[in-house]
Image (cartoon, rainbow, N blue to C red):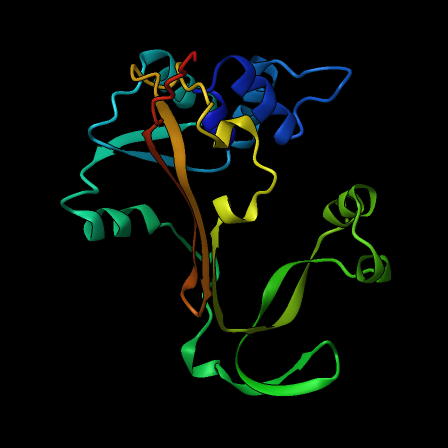
Length: 238
């Protein structure tokens, strides 16, 4: 949604900033400040923006996304090659630095809410890792005790038991977001996005997926925003 903000204009931009908590009744955060904040975050993350080939993005929008969001912008043919292009969007893999041995995985008790035991595939490794233990981390994690933990890490032989799991969640955000900001209505102005000023957001779909096994973590968080032409409003005087 913050990327979409860079394509919004006028009242649409102001309203979208308020919806994203970048603006209140007293002050409004500038585009540059918001984008600079994401520039710092995105130095450690990878963003890929794939748009349908028929959408002609403005150079100013493309440059902003490349500079601040480290976005790899590509065009695709979702109409004729929807399945292939969707699979390409969903791919993002991160491997473990220290892999688990499949032979060490066994069924062990996993306690839901600390009470009900369920047998699940549990990975195991015994090795030297940077390690720190504190009762404070069991009750509350904040910036102060997190910094203390990082500075107190020491090499120790550690036994790690980690359940294998896979989970995914799908959201239709146009149904979830109510009331809707101007940016999600027919009155939206996306004149900073492309050369067709009569665009509106027709659909926002968000899917998250994560799978953890012996080889590593496969994860994806994909937000698909479908744009369409706004209907033409005709006023009659009578």
